[in-house]
Length: 251
Length: 312
Image (tube, rainbow over all chains, first blue to last red; front, side, top):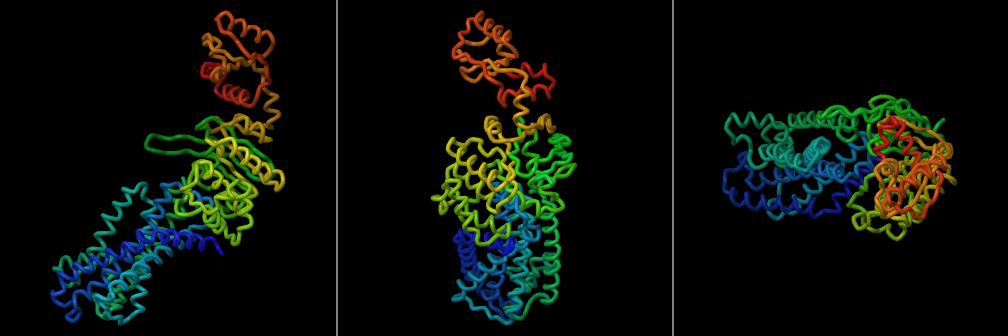
C-alpha cells in the first residue's frame, strides 16, 4: 500500500467517525429545505414547462449538499490539524504534494457523494426524480465534489483561524451556491442577473447535474462540463502548487 | 558518510516587525551511531535547526543531508531515514493509539506493521493503552505515543526535541532506556536537544552548543568536561549572600555554587561568607559538571565580563 492510500483511508475514517455531524446533519438540513420550499412553492409555475417545482428543487438540493460537504471536509480537516498541531505527523512523512492532494480531495468526494446519496434516498418518498441520464449525474457530482474539495484544500491552507475559515465559507461558498440556481431556474431572472449567473461556475455544476435528471437544462450540458472541468483544472493546479511549496505549513 | 550533515545552514525569519536571524551559518556533522547532544539557551536556534532537518522549515541558505540525502531535493529518502519526536505535545483526537501508529506506518508505505508497533508499545510502557483514545491519555502518555509515532518506520536517525520537558521521572527512565537500547543494539544515530544538562552529560558522546544561531562549542562530552577551568564550591545556607558573592554564584533555593580555581579562592569565598554572617552547611568541593561548562561557554561567547553579572 502506498502512503496516499493510508492518508485517504484516514481522511474517510475521520469524517465517518463523526457521521452524525458530517453526513446525517446535512441530509436533515436538505430534507428541511425540501419540505419548506416544496410546500410553499409547489403551486408555482412548472419549470421548463413540464417539471414540478419540487422535482426541480431536489437535484439542486442534492448538488448543493454535495458541494458544501466536499468543501467542508478538506477545509475543516486541514484547519483542525493546523490548529491542533497534528499536521506535523504528515509533514514529517515522505508523502508528496500529489499524495496530499489526492487524499484530501478524494475523501471530500466520498463525503460529498455520501451526503448526496443520503439526500436522494431520504426524499425518495417525497419526490421521485426521473433519472434520464445517470452518467451525467455521476459525472457532475464527482467533478463538482472534486472542485469544492480542491477549493477546501486552498481555504484550509490559507486560513489561520476558524474565523477566517468561516468567512471563506459564508462570504464566498454560501452565496455562490445559493445564487447558482439551486432554488430557481435562472431563466426566471431578469436579463442582467441571468448574465451574472452565467459567470458563476457553481451554476454550471448544478445545471449540468440537473440535466442528468430531466434531460433539460438552462444551458447545454457539454458547455457546463467544459466549464466545470476547466475550473477543476485551474483550482487543482493552485492547490497542488500551494501544497508543493508548503504554503503556510512549511516555514 | 555522516548520518546528518549541516553545511553552512542559515535561517532568517522575516515578519512585519523586521528580520530575525535565527541561524547564522551552522556547520557540523553527526556520525552514524552517535548519541549527539544539541544544547543552548532558549532562542539559540535549536528547534529551527531541527525543523530544517525535518523539512518543517526551509533554510535561507546552506544544505542539510540525512545519510547523504538532501532534505529538500531528495526529501522522501531523507524523511524515511529520520524519526522526529516533536517538541509540542500534539495528537489527533479522532483516533486511538494503535490507529495513530498504523496510520503513521501507512504514510511511510508500511503495511502489516503490528509486530513492531507491539514492540514499541511494550518498550514505552503503552501496552495497556493501545485501544485508548488519544484524548483520554495523560500528558506523559501522549509524549510516549509521540515517541512511538516517530519510531514506527524504524528510522536509522532519531531526533528528539526536548523530549523530557515536563515529564516525570518514570517516563524519563523508560524513554532513555529504550532510546539507549536503539542506539547501542540497532546502531541508531540519536540527536537530542534538552535543557536537562545532566541528561546530556549522561547520554551524549558528543555535544554541540548553540548560541544566537552560532555553534560556540563542538566537542566530545568528556573533553568538554575536562576543559572546565574551575572546580565548584558548593554549600547550603539560609542567609542571603553578600552582593559580590551573589554575582558569581549559581543559587538554587538553599544551595549555593561558586566557581573556585584553587584552594585560595575557596578560602576567600568562605571568609567572605563568614564576614557577611552567612552560615555555610554541607560544604563540599566538586568537579565541574556540564552545567558549569555550559555557563562558562555561554559567558565566553557573550564576552565574559558582561555576562558575569547576568549569572546570578
